[in-house]
Amino acid sequence: MDTVLQIPNTGSFLLKDAENGTMSIQLNPRSFTILRQAIIDGTSLPENSPDFENRFNRGALQIFLERDPSVYDFALEVFVKIHQNCNEFKQVALHDLPQIGEYTPNHGFLSHELLTRLRLDALAQDGTQDPRSALVELLDRLEDLSRDASNLSEQSATMNRHIQEFKVNTSGNYGEVKRLTKHWERAKMSDEEWHMRVGAKTKEMENEMVALEQKATDLDRQYQRAPSEDTPVWSFMKGISDALASTFNIKSDILRSREMLERDLKDLKRRYDELSDESEQQKQKFSEADGSIKTLQNNMHDLCDHSLEVATAIEDVNKAASRLVTDNEYLSQKLQYLHDDIEDDSKLEKKLSKVLNSKREEITECHSMWIDVRRAGEKFRNGV
Image (cartoon, rainbow, N blue to C red; front, side):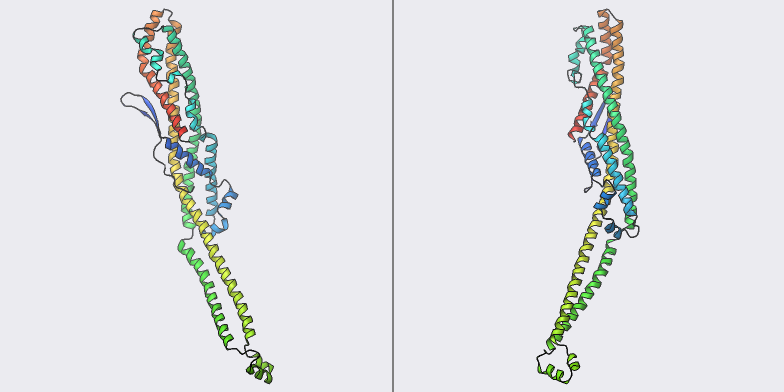
């Protein structure tokens, strides 16, 4: 999770209009897009201990967590749990959410021609359509609609269970991330402490290099003053005594000492550069882990809030579908009674006209709710 996800407060809500009592589903398609990306980010976290340790080197990080090295294992546990939670939800539910519109009926009952196609206006007003055939047609359509609503209710209930479980797990993950952040901040070495520690080591090596460079300068001066073996002074001293001649630093001896000094100085500079590079790499690795902890807390806060909104979305679709099932069954029972118990077409026409007039608002609302459910499904799909 390299970026902080800013989740807008745009969920799905089942609203009841105060004036006409109708229900409608409102869904911002960006909500599902952001939830989907947050879950993908969660699955990109380390999935197991080896993966975590490969990504966040234990030795490098525990140098910075010397006050409490066990925080490293706590971080490992939290990261892996979040990965597992997001991955499980992705496997069982994330793919199904965009399919919510597929569970809505795709027949004429959904069209804008609902009333005119069934000629309910004409039937209710002047009986221009054969009442029994219209009743049979309406019963058939209600049967189809009830089946579709039942399928949608069952599917959305399953989705709702998955997302409710995900919401609970995400809330628990968020609590663990907050605890991890507190422990991490208490255990970690500050930038000032790190610079002081590295600075002490590099300063010691810098002083050693200065001392070696001073020795090299002294040897250079001695070399300039030292007699060569072929000079009269050295020959005179050797003539007196080999021991006396050996007390003079001849150039060959100085050169050998200078070469050894150069090797020591070169080795020290190499170790100095390695220490500087290693310290920089360790600091970079810790900074990456430190940034991941901070980003994770922000992301889990947003994911926790947004999972609640999406849970509300699916729950509302389920409520709409369940209500449609109940309303359709109730209307079907009334119409079936007319069909079975009234043989006279003129009486049937009057009774049917009365029922349809009394249920006109519910039928229109039912049509509107199906349209809203289908639109919600389209918005889920558009968010993929």
